[in-house]
Image (cartoon, rainbow, N blue to C red; front, side):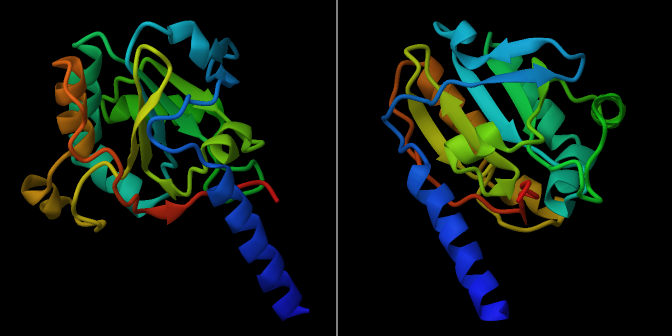
Length: 200
């Protein structure tokens, strides 16, 4: 029975990975509710760069970037340049990590987070569409609706905030290149963090 469950899990993961769009392809469109219940559609932001950030406040890797102020600073830098930042929580409601929308917004607010919107994806629809595997898992979409970055937030895969200052912030660097009309040098990197608590 355990072996059968393990095999099923591996196939499910493979399905997520296989469905993931590659850099250079069209970014899959989706509609999610934000923390206030308003519908937000990715394609509504066509014509602007968009960052997608998969998040989960219960994850030590997410806490590393939020508690240190790194995520808020990266968000502020992006939105200050006219970039749309969508923080997406695909944690299922049954998970001990799940926070109700108001509590999620409060948690982020305490850490001075500045996403354009915080989106709820309890069914995992958008997460599976992108093949998002970890929190954080980061993506950048260009004004034409193409995926131009997919991977980690930075180059040091640890939950230690001390490592932030020695890491390359792939999102900040990639956005700077994209906004300057250049191709992103490191367009695909390895995401790291906690596995997303998808609804089974």
